[in-house]
Length: 171
Image 1: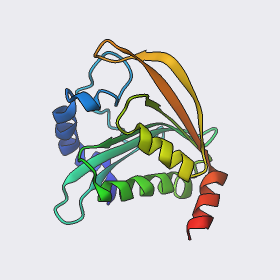
Image 2 (image 1 turned 120 degrees about the vertical axis):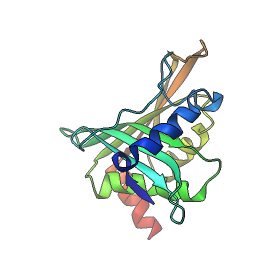
Image 3 (image 1 turned 60 degrees about the horizontal axis):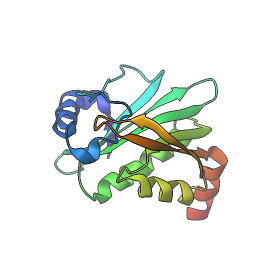
Image 4 (image 1 turned 90 degrees about the horizontal axis):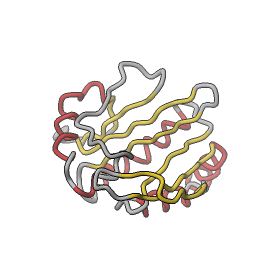
């Protein structure tokens, strides 16, 4: 179940600090600095932030965020963190997050990137293919992470019409 991140700030920050030094979470942010906390917006003007909460025990499973360009109705800089391994409820919330971007918040386009080598890269590839979007391209050696290595960055784009066509085919 998706809920506003601001309502769960303390638990979210605790979970985020727990993963800060885990190797497979190094792909969360570009750059050599390690973030110890997530900046939490106090409104939806510039961005949206949600957490994935387990229905029964209210356990925090993950985080979804993005920034919004209100001039072009573009959701960008997607931030998706799954704190659990292989979690179907989180996957359902991931779909709900994308659905809300287009249906509730009026996005005409969703643009995001992934660092090549991220364990979630295949999931992003599959998601963009399923929604009818596209891999825009890959920038070679575009970022350095805190491990000192240079990594490629792959960019994705899904337009509202892609989402609408996917939705029409699903229902």
